[in-house]
Length: 311
Image 1 (cartoon, helix red, strand yellow):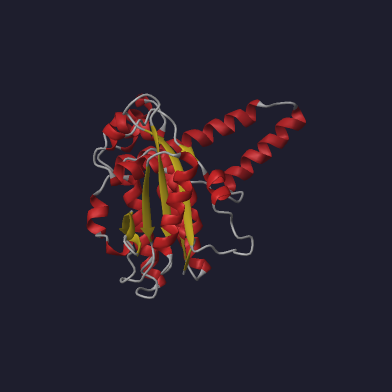
Image 2 (image 1 turned 90 degrees about the horizontal axis):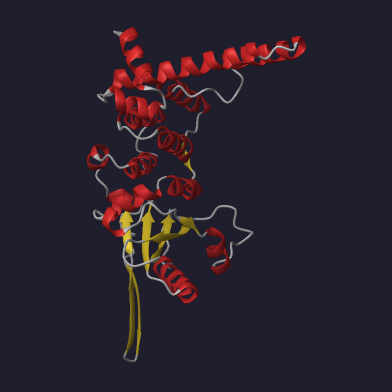
């Protein structure tokens, strides 16, 4: 079973607003969520060039420009490091990032170290240096995934909690069988649906769950893909029966100069997918019709119709 820590770069962008709400109880008062976040990946690479010979980086770094609600056009920088391995020089590197970032931007910085390793003793909290009466200490926020309570995360409605739960599942390597890991991933997938997240975030979190922790046996990946299709009504990447029929209709329509058949087939497919997704939400959640309509991107009348048909 392998995990892909490079996926953190993408998921942090997908749920960065939730990241801020997860770590700051008063996030709505501190940050202006009405203004877009700016991910300064290229700028960070200029400050810390990537080693072209390192094809498996042991950490992931992000730098994000965030507007606050204090003053006019006030913005700060959020620096995030995701560290997967024990590194005795990690705190020193965090300080290096701080002084180079601050030297360039001259803006307030809040830094986070997200530790996804399995070493219970590895938990850097600060960098300190002193010599002949001169002393420096740099503290940063440290979040050790291994120390988190799965029950607390499960009860949280914050999507970032689901990211942490996914990492906790990955840290089970060597402690549970692949079959048990498969059941854990499927259970986590079911929770995604029941939380009431937007479909866009469900898709992002589902992809992270699928790709971050990979099985050693291809058959378990296939089983998990089947669970995704059933629970999220996500079509296969390869051409299935529906895609085959639509493609055949398209080609026949082109030959006959008729496009209505294609449009009709697409509409039928869209209807069936929405019907299945809404049915799942009605069955597995306690959301009202308005909430389900919002999550599925359909009308309230459509949800009410599905409810009546399933009664």
